[in-house]
Length: 248
Image: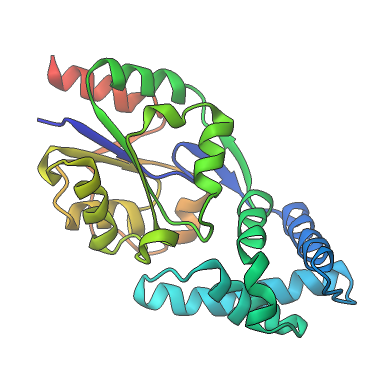
């Protein structure tokens, strides 16, 4: 019987997307943050957009090849800011500031409708609740949960930036399970990508999986249908409704 429900963050509990305005604003903030720490970049925003993308594309190729997440200082100090002429030791003191800013600025984020009602229903059922999230910031997920006023529902938040493992690597799921003190067969996982969320949870032995579509689904899941979710939903509230019906 399911007694634990674990959630992905971006694309699942919240809708997220990227557009030209968010790319521009994130690059502008890179310039502002770097200059505030005494390193003027002497570049325009359009050039900064291109360099930030180039650095992240390079990091993405390495990251996606082994499902490992580097620390903020390694990402920004070794992949992104060297394109602006800065070296690792210069970037390290404010790398998390850049990482946090990028996560909340490069992506538009908004909590899905009825998330709070869904979480409250699961809480009333006695479910243990947690989050497993791929993120390149150490603190962003915690802060945004506070901003949404839902952090108190979760007994654990497991992040790739902390563990070093990215979904679908089984280790990040195992870390969460140990911290939740839950058995995989008694866990349900809710996510928006087949390639990261559904594949990872199935391989980790989770009892049930829920897939909800997001704007990331088509981008991240091209040709990936290795594992089928137990449930495909269109409204996050269905997680509660389905599990409640299963328990009678």
